[in-house]
Amino acid sequence: MKINLGNMNSLVESEIKLKFVEGKLVSIDYGELCLECKRTTQMGSGLYVNRIPAGWDSSMGDDGEIDKNNNQEVYSTEGWLCPDCLEEIEQPTTTLGENDES
Image (cartoon, rainbow, N blue to C red; front, side):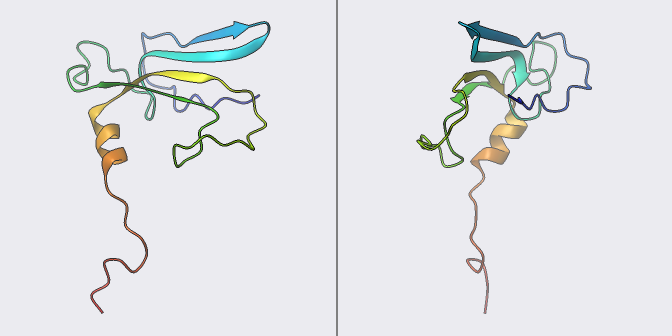
């Protein structure tokens, strides 16, 4: 099983904790890291005050619904979202042609 840990080149004091039950991965705790950009959100980082707790289940599709055809192992992810990533996620999406002035 491959797990994308993102760009981990930045200095991070947080430890990513993997929890296994009977040899199966059941959760990934990113500690003080942002789940999207993997920057630290710990106190003193400048991202601590406006971070929000976040997490999801690996069986969720991009639309937030449970993907019943997902044959991968199911595990939960826990961590934080930094304010920059939260803002990006909350931006409304537009569909092609919606903003055309024709």
